[in-house]
Length: 293
Image (tube, rainbow, N blue to C red; front, side, top):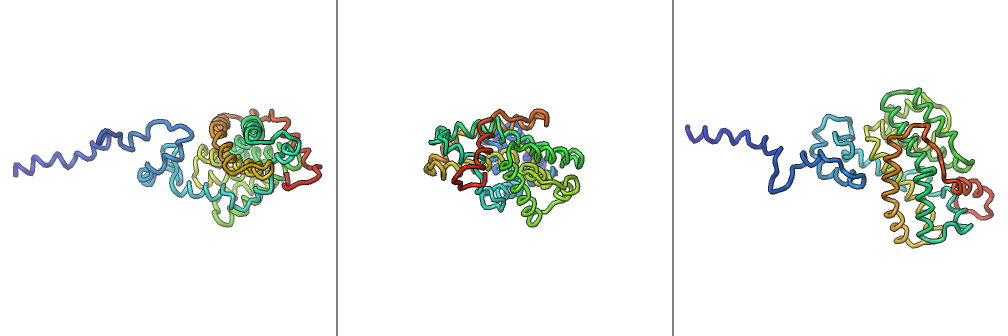
């Protein structure tokens, strides 16, 4: 009997060890308390998956806003994959004109052009629209969602840019409604009956499926940049390895843009990428074209 009493404390010991270090390493629960850098946010989700699965947070979102439930990661990868039927491959956002004029002629100039588009042009504007659409959807605020959707549709600097964002937005809503329907898409349809800009559609769907805004922003901007680079690789032309070098070089630019968008108001939206905007206008009358914008 005395031996059994001595063993009783051992029954409670595992609970205490969860807060301690094992074999010199912090437990996952302790490690998750630190703020992960932007480029580690999605990658760290795999290690903490068991904790996320036991969490009572919204579907797809863990208590650590930078971590993703596997189903949320799956949906982001599906929606923002080149295979998702939004027709992104047919648009160059004016890069075709920039190549013809010699503004973009190699990997270095492509990277410089895209960095400006991302930080000071359409990339930043779209990121703010996505963040506000996501927020309005979470708040179930149809009035705020209408304001975001209306501004996003009106904000395109050219006819072709308007076609690019609204055609992709419409296609995204139709495909997502058919395969990944959620009530948030009904909220969008009820709040706004005009053309839907692509980032607004993505923001609404992400919020509707419980995907946190930060990883949704990073995934969206990565997809946008990858599509721009794909156009540049075909137009310059460049090798696939050069394309990946450009994408790698844009990682900190995308992280900075996403972070700015999270704290920006709709009044902060504006573009200083004037030549990129002019490119989207000039492309309409370009003699030979491979892309729709």
